[in-house]
Length: 228
Length: 189
Image (cartoon, rainbow over the protein chains, first blue to last red):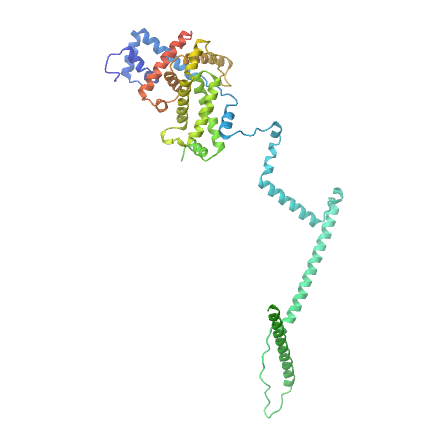
């Protein structure tokens, strides 16, 4: 129904009252409604009463919800939640300690302290004051440092000794004897001076090599026999 | 990019308890107010609000963001429960009406000036009594429009009636409410 196309009657006031109060009624209809209200006491009273009521209703503050409503809803939907007792609130600040990050950090700090105290030679069973005295600390650290240096030097010299022994043994063990050409007689069948000594050394080396080969063959045979 | 409310609903559907807690905190006061304005009883309103959230919790998967905001959907659930409750308790109310009129409790929200709070309390009590005297169809329309401030389109979705019917119910509801208030000696100005 078009509010502009007919003569305004009381029913129209009720029909278009929402639009009139929302200020969305076309201007012509608004004029018609207002002119009708000037001549109709019932409509005028109704418009004034309803517009006042709407203002008052919109100003009403919403009620506060009961204190336990949200928790009751959460209990009913998510299940009863464990209520914190009052004394537990006092220990809330300790809750970060239970996190893994903190536990790893604490463990690494503890290990560092143990390693450092071992390096400094701290003895915790003695009195803390004597142990933590700076003079004693320096003295102990110095002694520890000297001991560490002496141990290091000893290990180094041992290693050097082993290396030297290995180096000396290695050429004889590993280098294959190179067969030398038979001594060449000097023209006329005469032996060159010094060649006789070389020939002796070569014979010794060849004999040694043969004995070692035989020994290894014998040990291999023993191993085969034991495994069988 | 999803709207925060839709994200919240999705988190709830994924089993996020904190998201559900947030949703309850966001809407519990509004739902409680609708229930209270409709029933005029804090106790009943509290029970109904819990019932609304239980139903919302069970049927949250059926919410579709395309069909409107989560608030509108929850209001629609509330309205359906209120109508069910109204029908269920109709016989009790007829019996009760022969006895004394129900006491209206009206605790306003904290933080108001005392004089304004007193005026609000008096007006609230009268409005509550007057709301109890009009038919449920008109009452729910007035509550949704004037006390909850919803748009006509939202009310149309909630009540599932054409916009013309929504406006007509609101107008008639307001007129009847104003008449009842006038009878109580409160002339809206």
